[in-house]
Length: 200
Ligand code: G4P
Image 1 (cartoon, rainbow, N blue to C red):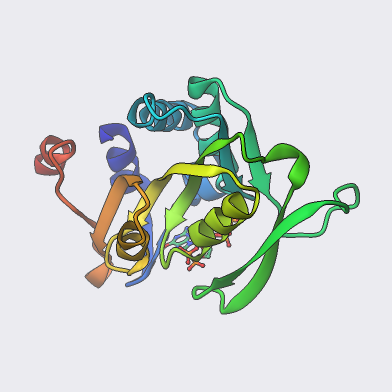
Image 2: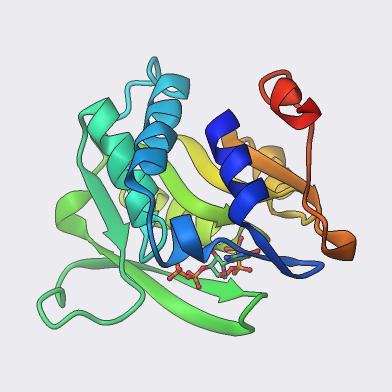
């Protein structure tokens, strides 16, 4: 995705060799045009997969997930990290450990919105150690849904999450894969799709 790579290059801020700040278009302020294209790209990649529902996690997964849902014409469910006042009964839950934040959180989805009839596409903004994606996959499996794949906006390819998910047999489609954030520089993995943009 040229537009995404261009945006990361121009607005991404390397906070440390393992953390990239993209607050200006993904994690705080959101760029709707970019998200629209992100959603289109996910929809194109999974257009023949028979997706019936998109599953994501609050908060930063919601924007790309909604746009993918718009293009695939399917509903979007987001797992909650906080207990909801109205969402109390019939919950499917899983626990997610964040290596970045060093904390465990319980995530939940109502049974009402996921079932064995669903073929789910999991979407998230970042893939680091893969814990959020695994928690979402666990929820989908507990609901009896099938999982068509996992769509990620930015994968940190130098961490183990992507490899672990792929080794488990999940189809993981990441729109931008970052190889390294060493020395304050963002370097991207070369793919047949982004090679022209990277050479520019
Ligand atoms: P994992 O799910 O792949 O194991 O990731 P991890 O627990 O390490 O990540 C915890 C949170 O930090 C997630 O957001 C994730 O999206 C985010 N994150 C991980 N690496 C980066 C990074 O390099 N840059 C940025 N900007 N975010 C990163 P969250 O806490 O759930 O926040 P939000 O979705 O409410 O915004």
